[in-house]
Length: 186
Image (tube, rainbow, N blue to C red; front, side, top):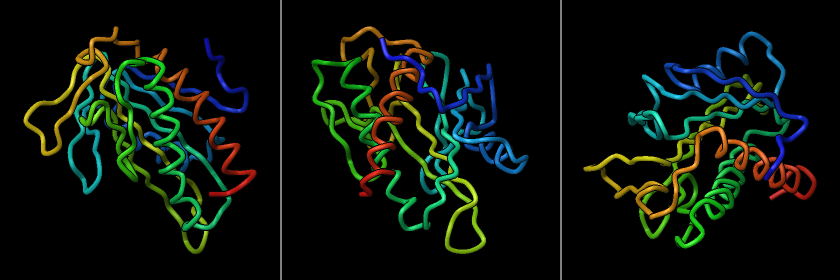
């Protein structure tokens, strides 16, 4: 089993409006980063273009708050880093599924959306003060009747991992790929 990456903090909640909103609040208060924020449920989660992102019990809603100290154009590359890390983590939980990345912000399993990624930041110039990488993963269930067909780990015929176990795997995978990005760039 993967161990928690040593340089990363963790804050867990039963319910939040949005893990990205909590990251913004933490950033505004000067909280140290990197820190993962996980909630069992979100009441106002969102995806790209402000779309609602439902996160019910059994799915993962998590955000990583970073202070990358890089230009905004480089920080945008972290969407790709997050997608690769998420795909790697999901391949471990759904080994029989064909896991793929739909650049720049979705992870697919057998051609259906398994996870979504949303980056948000604040800056007053070239470098963002902070960056929030929100990741939602369908573990136990998935939305139906959405624009892009979705799926969950459970619907793939694999046991749905707990959100905590999923975040542990995801955090380890992200730390690995983030270090590669920091050392070698895109």
